[in-house]
Length: 124
Image (cartoon, rainbow, N blue to C red; front, side, top):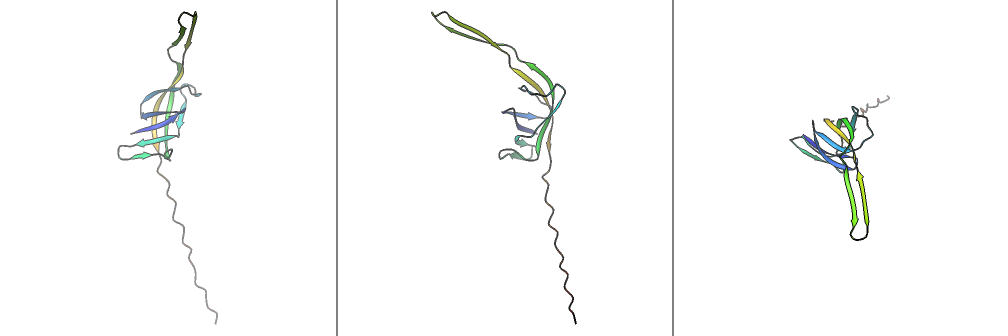
């Protein structure tokens, strides 16, 4: 079973037990998190495609760690002009463990109760 989930504006393919790195979330390490924007769900028997999201499906997970990636160096230079700029960037991330892909069966509406009409008694 897998699902495609929208997390912080990006789409990720997740399955139960997966660990994914996403853009930094505001949840503390060890905290539970739930994603309701499921775009596609495949349970092995059928594929449910959202319009734009699949109703009654959610993905729950645990934030394992909040950290920062390795530094990326940005170096700009223009030859013969003495122009050189060196800059570094470290992207923040959250490591998430996918616990469960939850599906709740769509609730069927109960059939409306039929009104019983009692015949009127005739007066003699």
